[in-house]
Image 1 (tube, rainbow over the protein chains, first blue to last red):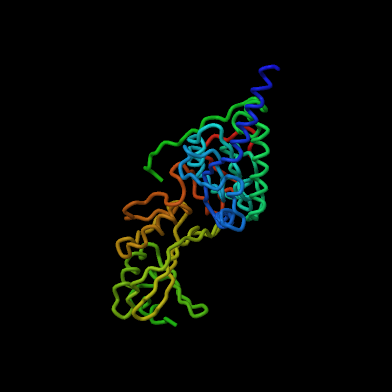
Image 2: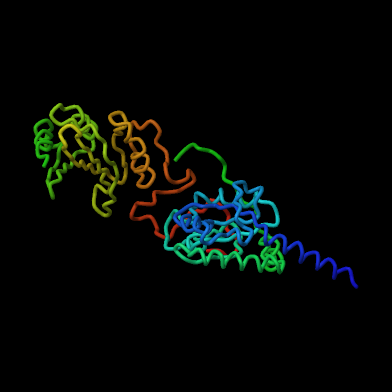
Length: 176
Length: 163
């Protein structure tokens, strides 16, 4: 039997382990957070999918959930958090604001978190029902099992470019 | 409701300082000259029969294309006498400057910073006049009516293919 058979089986096993041990980092900025809390509560119980444990440090988490509106001012913050997470990492955009900017079309709101970080699964809704978020999680688990959705690697392979490094703005506080 | 406030103002200040007064739906307002902004505010606060000790709100209105373009709007309230009054002062587009009220009501600090941030009106004598909501790299003042609606000022380089 060829060696590739064993390595692919090993990858399957690793992916199986990964999809049931997602450690999430909730980047909660707005009202979607209320519905996101329901996701954790007993009725919907995201623990059934092995993704119940939030790590409030990006270095210990592998699933970034962007919940709510992202402003231009928050762009560098979100990007820095994404950069701090260890590979492999995945991103869910929770709600229309995180997906596209939602009904905001103004000077301050970023039209979707995918302007600065790659996103694997988009969840529409204002806010989405917890069932939709569970659906997104199952979708993401399927992709992880298939070895897809590892956003940075996939982006590089499919589209031929890497995610550009964030230009973190200088921390000057002077001027207006 | 608080006609006495306007009466006191007209009594103590000239017609060049208190330009126009009015009353609508039980709320009194006075349009004042920008040069008299600080003395009038101080008078309203210190006059024993008024004691407008509570700073309620300070904001700005863009009246483009009218001149003067901006109206700085101040709301005051007297806890003692339960009077309420609104002051307006027009500042021109070329040099939108008005006196700061931080020395009278420390609470005016962030309101004036907000008006500066979003409208570009400068407040003379403000201890720390810089943007309060937007980031320092932001160019222009977004609540001015000639600010382009779709204009965005991203801090980060965008991913290829995004809007």
